[in-house]
Length: 486
Image 1 (spheres, rainbow, N blue to C red):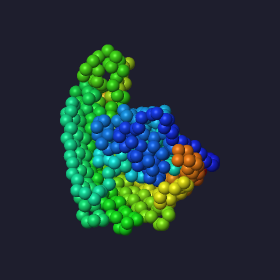
Image 2 (tube, one colour):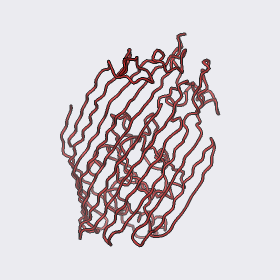
Image 3 (cartoon, rainbow, N blue to C red):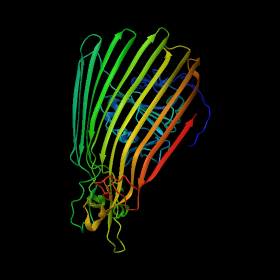
Image 4 (cartoon, rainbow, N blue to C red):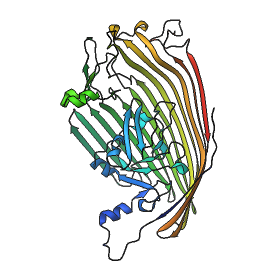
């Protein structure tokens, strides 16, 4: 176990440049941009008055720019790069990113949906649809966001129910048999209660072709780097008083398809070929497949208590994975004349996340603005991460004699974080303010698992373990724990 202690204290002085004499008045589009309301600092304020490196994109702007998921954010947001990995997306802000996207890893850039932190890269990569806006905060955001915000934060704010009837829909068709569709309906039920429902579907054939090295006539993968997912969301908003409301949202969906190519496009073919042939990779008889189901129930309460505003955000998230996420597309071993072998995996997990945060702030703008709060986050990841090395001469047999563990990890990983925080903004003038913040956090991670690798192991009934028989006997136990207080 390792631990560290430090005090987190931040001060920022910010100012708005004053217009010089003789300059022209701002255009309508500039004025609209200045008046965008954001919650980047856990309170509502205009984007132009927020003292952080901030980019804000409305839902309409995202659609117009073809931003259908966080993977496309790098096309429009400065200093943001989003890559793909076998476990989901990997976000880098100003060059800061995590190198471990497995269950034991922590994100280096926090990703929130309606104030709820999303810890696993699989869910971070889901589609954008029916959004109010997306906020990208560049630079460390630890005072208000705590762990996983070393490089910055991305806040996704979904559209909330309104008082008027609305409905919309769109369909997009493209190359590689791309089919995208989304629809939304907003229905006011009473003067104080409204419901909004939205659905999104993304399908696209893969564009990486696993066809090389098919001297072994086995069933090979479908085309890689495809899309096959859908998500639905329903939100209810109740204005139970002139000074308070409750918002409850349910989101659920499915991720399918073959997933991303493990090694991507082969560099030598990229250099010397063109068109379809440059996207040809080595075939693998152990075909990759994604089969994930998820849902999230989250709610928010807002209430003015005289000069004080109270906010609560809470959620429960369930993500069930059943994937072959490491279908190898690199050159299989065997260049020395030995029997080639392939890598493949079977990943099964049920990720359960609970999140709570309460905040108090001033209920109306004033010269001294403040926010204090506390949060709790707990994530449990029981998983069977089976990685196998399959001998080509008997592939795609699942018999234990054809498959060596490489390695197999079975166990549970837990992440817990809790903290209290506060921040003050003092307006020295209309164009200059000073910001100070303080946070105290406790972050804890544990892994209790068993590893099986490089030998012969057995299942619960004494049978030699393989892809269809889970290893339970003879492995190496891992019990690791880390804690950070800051």
